[in-house]
Image 1 (cartoon, rainbow, N blue to C red):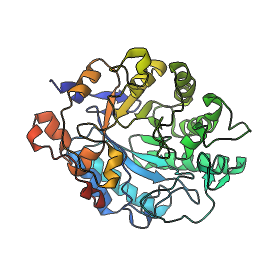
Image 2: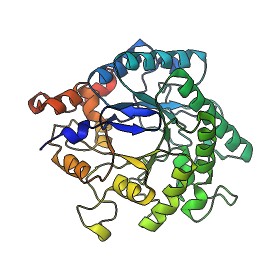
Image 3: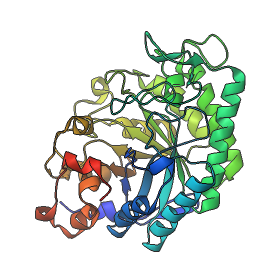
Image 4: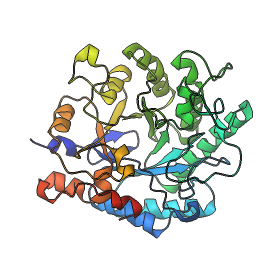
Length: 370
């Protein structure tokens, strides 16, 4: 199947991408003292040299007392971490790449990889890690305002350092998503409510503030998901009408691109409406909002990424289904995760047809930055 559609350019605001392949943001937690070093810069540089159209960094946290849940997660604030990120983006640009940091706050979510606990109070909408599981204290309006300000400062830093775009992490049961999710947002003030549109207020205020700070042309990506690490079967919305109420205001507030996370990109979002081969999450988001979308989920590999953390390896599989969906304009970009961890040259091999050279994924590669 002709893969040239993967290598068509795309312009979004002030950014022009050479192809449609995105390096998915993947937590590596290998930043010593929260500071990206040469090893981190070289890791991203190699993917730029390998032909990735847009690199999204692993989650890098904003300036709140307990914004990260692992001591190896990098900061996106403070003199030393920002100098480290400057080395990263300079290295990527020297290799001809484009890149954005994924700005993150883990909220009340823990990680299964360590029992480390942060210093300082844990931010959360309602003092819950998951439905019925308490952790942290509900954020008051001062904490909410300070958190929005922390995201704004990180966004401005990203633009000033020379990044091409930024991504706000609003998925997977972390802080922004904890406001979206009825299971972890039981607030009775203006940041809560029974409707998804009401619970989206925190994200709307954050996006609007970031947009005002970075100007009209700097691209803003928002990662969203139905599933949560706390509950793979969680659903924020169950109909296209609800999805419109959730996502369209976020786009109107300033989001250029919706990065629609699902565990398997080929699975239909509403199969009862358009069948087993119907539009996926990114497809419906694009149809309902008009925004550009990124799809993601087990691209080019067997298995799915959550199993990787349990030590499961994956083998390469063909990408014909991906090409078919791109050809019918279902979504605009495709994010690749595990394949790029083990094979920095995955994009080049896909473009040249070197399928026999594809490496698959080895879970041992999670322990180092290749």
